[in-house]
Image (cartoon, rainbow, N blue to C red; front, top):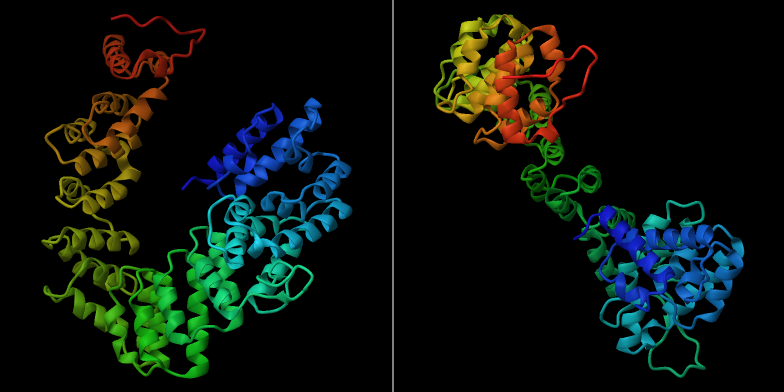
Length: 510
């Protein structure tokens, strides 16, 4: 699936080929692309015809012409225009074009079920079943993009009406099988609306997904359990919040539902789990709050503490019991404990720096920093060599403010290939905090580091290094600086190095 930028670039490319005389059909070139391709195509065709004076020989070019009279005449001339371009003209800034396009769009959609499969494919620009609801589903992403325009709300309102079971010119069509003289209008059937909403709420396009969820919620189609299930399975945060809020409202109105609460609690998204923890109180299950005190998400832990207090419990006592029990202590138990701990708990956190679990050590170190407790530099330097990457990273973070007072030779030794990648990264971070020649030496030494992240950061530093300023300030001997520059040029290439000339600069030799 292409990105919006790639779709737009493709649409502009097709527009240029059309205006310059390509015989390829526009519909065929834009098959499978998103709404941005059609919008970019329309804008590019108009731009090219406005500034280059190209004659609009093709009907597609006339429909996108800068002159509203040309666009209106193109709408009147076409029998079966590409429905996406007609939809764009429904949001046109010229009232006459806009009104005519809306009539044409209704006529195109009205005859859709009577088309042969070939004609349906041309209308939608992709093979679909003879189901008007599928055509409307395919047009929804473009409709929503156009809805952001000043006159683009008409199609969105018509689409909402169709999905809600009301009359809509987008969902009214000739009844198949009846003579053309018999005018009998149908709207979407309940089964078609159901299928269309399912496709919209499952769309990979986020605005479409959110629109489908909003219409579904407005129609009141689901009970609390189904709303909770959809909230737990949703991967778009905005849509997930919509399902979650609706599930909580349904639980508040309809009473406890064990299945709905369990579905919320089982989600992998923190906001949904937090809502599930909050719902435990109404479900009469407040005693389960302690299960979520050590959740990996801070919002869930906060909700669990609130629920525990509402039930008369003490979160601090529960946390202290967790972190002092070797069998139950965990990284997030320690993190939660530090969120309610005080200065009197500093010794307990210091003791946890000796815990065999690396994530626990890192959480204890972070907790000490949160409480403002000072950890001695030798202890932090020893943690740079820790087997846990999170502990080494936290140690480097606490050492960083005083990096200028650290032994640069000892830090440079920790960037050697014999150390773990996270130790090299932590030491390099501190050398970067020191700056000067110590950072330059480490950066050049790590240009070919086997760890991709360390290698990338070292290359960025060397490529941006002002070598002439270093020479002028006398921060390094000329011979050493020349050797570092030669190695950097060999590994990076001279073109990537910043070698800006200065009036005081002198050529580097040796």
